[in-house]
Image 1 (tube, rainbow, N blue to C red):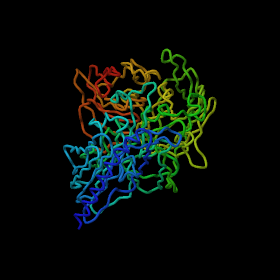
Image 2: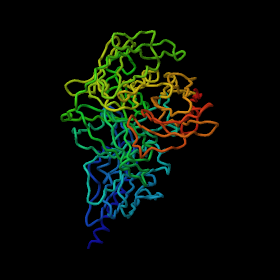
Image 3: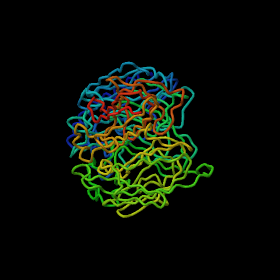
Image 4: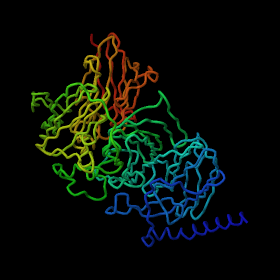
Length: 634
């Protein structure tokens, strides 16, 4: 009787597919409309009984509005558990290790469907399941090892990073839980709608219209997350977009517990576990991260590539979007889009001992330097301390390094003499939400951080709790401001240490003005604001190299230090300001170390007694974007 019921069910699904293939064609003609909903990945698909999980997936066309009710409807293919529940990302496949999995796939599209990732994990090779139009196929496999994976499909047979707009939403998360455990966690799947001709080129071009989403929605329509002070948050991130994303968490460090390429992964424990505020996630990769909120307030988690969160990619215009001086433009809800999530942390911050060190009083004033980028204007900072006021003639582009001391309170007065509003984010610094620098969002429902208008001021207060390398930069997410130089390095030292520029070197990678975010000329990257910089190393002693990538759209820059055309050795001692455990430090060739946007990495280089080294900065494809001469001096 059971076999007969199963046969009847399969026949019904096949009949449905045959019928709805015609409906799919009607829908393309506008006669039938199916709405594709966003999937919060809170509920696993299918049913589970006696160690077997059964899932039915149907692929069909529908209409999707990832940018809210005002946005156009995008015609895409999507998966659902039936035709009335199409979702993006696709239904969550979540099973326990030791389970057997049975997936039935019905293709209600007019094209063949090629499904990837429905395999036993870990897998060295993918298995592709092809389902003809109006057909159904069944696949059976064992769940395999615990981890975060994904599955995806294409109607064109293309690789994941070349899929067209129509097939771009055919993919979802696949989690295998450890037997006996079901953690309190969340899954976030990033997807992209993109109809450009050259989808391998991530350089933004005038007129580009792309949609980046998290769990099917684009900021400000992404889910608002709620976390509690002191309670561990565990997140799984899956990148099903066409490009890599450096994901940045404001205000807190997170632990990187595991990574995968979608088929097989690696986990980290103890000294091997990395701590970060920014982590690059390659296309087709996954990240397991965990963090513990320590302070209440509003915080962001977002991609740090400006081109992936700029409102310029929207299909609808934001009021005032072309007016740089308009304060509303710099409100987070209007000045960002795409891969952004807001987090509200509630609860009371843990009590900390009050510092006995005196508060330092600094002033940073923003000025314009006309024609600095020839012919573009540059934006920069002048610094003063105590009674010494910043002077316009002392402005530097980018801003001067801020050398602070761990556990010493600092008060920084920001004054804006630019012709437009802005806001400054203290990247990697653990501080109160109000001072985090996201206008219209940082703070709380009672009081949020304002944009700093022309001739306005705002005072920021924080006490850096750890020594390391950090960044201050504009967070209006105006591509023009960041590329123009509105950023600088922060170095936090231990009490009693002094900053010795002869053997402690800042390598601050930025852009040569806003024009280069579009044209990408051969040397668009500047080091410390210059294209011809020289950084001398002190001979015969360890030199600390603090590398910071605060470019706009260079998701990964490969940095090497060479001598006689061979890499020297270096040792990584910190990432994003967090010290690397001594047992995890090791000497390695200083060759093609990737530093992503919003990331800082500190290395120790034992300089030779004499000679010249070269610090090369290249794109992943091997294109030089900058080369720094490093003479060895006594």
